[in-house]
Image (cartoon, rainbow, N blue to C red; front, side, top):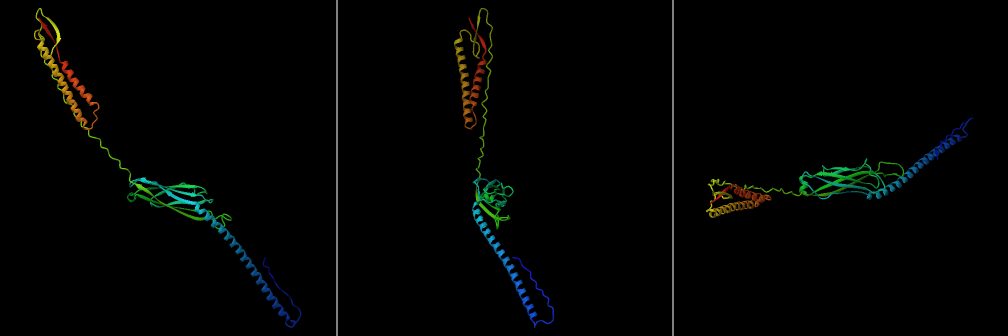
Length: 319
């Protein structure tokens, strides 16, 4: 109903006032006019009040629905953290993982994650443009350098805060878009830290190389060959280093040759035995002696062959 404007005007002609009736009528009309205006104003105020009441009722209904949405969505926003035990010393870097799951049907906007502890920890999240869509999961990785206090405590406390806005509020999304309702979630946990294993330092054994005994080769005396006399045949035969064997003396000289050869063989065996003793000494040091016995045997054999090679052929003279 619109407000109406009323006006009253009249013209009185002639003389006299009808015994005062005209003045009384004018006063009556003026009073009625004021009452009508007052009634119209009251009606306008009542309409405005009614409109405001209806708006308040709508807002109250929307607010109730928004609160229901928030109550439904809040348990479906889960922010957690985890970290396995890690071997680290002071100065080593360890990691921890934070996970945010939005299982609600409402997007989380302006989302971000900040580290509370450790103060020097850094965090990286796979949140794109601050949006975590409904039904999505995002992961954050925090890094921290272990200090002496962490190593002594045997654990590092990690704490992070996730903030964002849910697109709900008075009249939204049923009427008009708004900034949203603020959401704050905190996740805290500890990551065990153990000392890294000590790697033993292996010192290789000291290898002592023992020089083999020196072998002295003594040249036998040079045999002197006496030219045969006329009528005497010379027969070449091997003799020892003691000189030529003459007919009539061959029994004793051959025995001397055998004795000398036995001495040479015994000398070679003694040297081989000394080489075996040196091998046993080296073995007690822990050195690698795989090729040494064969080398010592070759030295003894070479000495023996060197003695035999010094023998000179001579003649046995038969008369």
